[in-house]
Image (tube, rainbow, N blue to C red; front, side, top):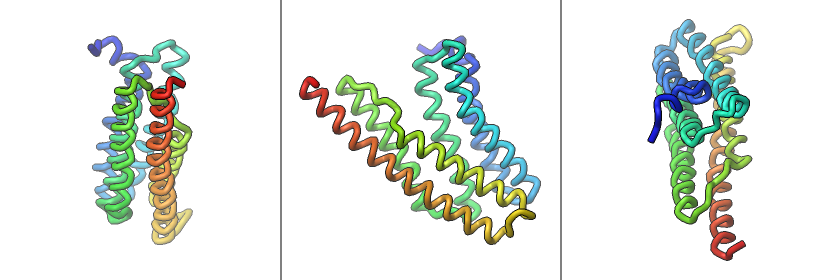
Length: 194
């Protein structure tokens, strides 16, 4: 059972904040005027900081909880999905790209459930951390280039942004494959008693 005390721990509150930041960015980025894009940029930078800090705060304060282990990846998925949805709504991203990103999160979630039925706790893999970093760079980079048009012409910013998004999608697809293959290997070892 989840207690209010556990939910209100600083690290969990940092994770929870991303559940609210994602929809806020979705709305503001979708407005599309320059002021809204700047606000979206500030919000995505804030969200990325909470993603870095929640784990550090949890470890330093001795507040690593089962809720936090569940809340952090869920908040990441919901937050990032909102940003990618905003990109799709503005014609910056294709539907198939969102399908791969959302599909990866579903695959990993169900892979974790499958591993748990075999008595295995699926640890975070390097590919998952790499995926988060690359997606974050793509999101912040694209919004930053649009927010500061004096640095890069808007048309060129969109081209560079699309390249960043393609890279993010490729890394995301690789992460899905890595989690599935890693889980198959781990469950086979557990079945062999080794």
